[in-house]
Image (cartoon, rainbow, N blue to C red; front, side, top):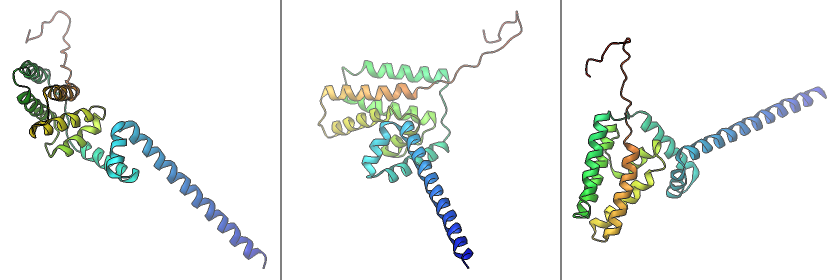
Length: 197
């Protein structure tokens, strides 16, 4: 008769230990996921927690961003495309002194065109910023800052110095997004000349 309660005690102890081990494993996995997201998103992780009001909601949002961007086809630019974009940016900067308001609008348009060419969808601003944050978390704040100044400019509240800062913010994002695909090198037998030389 004493063996039955002892068996129940052993079974209950094993179940309790298994539940504790499962809880510890779950906690460890959650902590590991939080650390991974913090490392990947940097300041965007903290900003998202503040915006959504909690770690759980923020981490769900960041994981959803990763999944969404994973399904996109983001490609680097061909060298010729990158050169065209660089020339367009240089021409845009040269016009700043004569037309700072117009250049801010043009900088935004050029950044959008570059993003579209790379494969980012052109939804609303927050969606674009969220998508960018997955692969470029350190520059997304520049994009947000530029957009804030552009919005102030639309209301007639931004001065020339702020407009200059907006262009600088756009430039940081532009430079980061101007990823170039390596040109393929032809491997030819010794002494043979390439056809396009």
